[in-house]
Image (tube, rainbow, N blue to C red; front, side, top):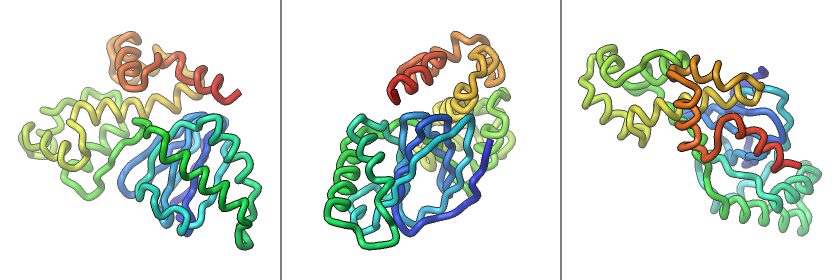
Length: 236
């Protein structure tokens, strides 16, 4: 795995994963970007990137004036066939001189396509500095441990109801949904490396591969064993 340390750009970015899996960290959370997915990164957003597997990517930089109507937070989108062809063209646009009129049209088409694509549920909010931050970090570091609302509440000195309220208010998710999302985030780089569903399921605290697969399918709409074969087919 390779790590690009925290950095920022004055321009907006679209990071397009051709293969492998990127996990992108900002001050507010983590986004997982599998193959044939892209991450929108607003201008001046500090981020670090952890690469898993054989990562190949394309990066397109977009002038802030063109991105004013775009989201002001990161988001993961599917790379449609049209968007993929636009990105292939856009990577050759020079950054060291004013864009030509044709180049601006290409960038505007890219932004319009991003706006029309649904956001994918591959985000894990991490409320740093919050009372629940140690709980979140513990689950991220040890996703297979038997974390329950009650045991985590005991470690923080809060009641279960209060801890649940903090999760909903600060992450937009219940405790159980956040824990499930953390496990999905942890599983994707391992699936990309070709590890077995059985090994991943047991390491993440599931009693059986079928229980893990059912959770994964509910969240992402496809079985874990088929997730990367489907994304690979879509990139061909």
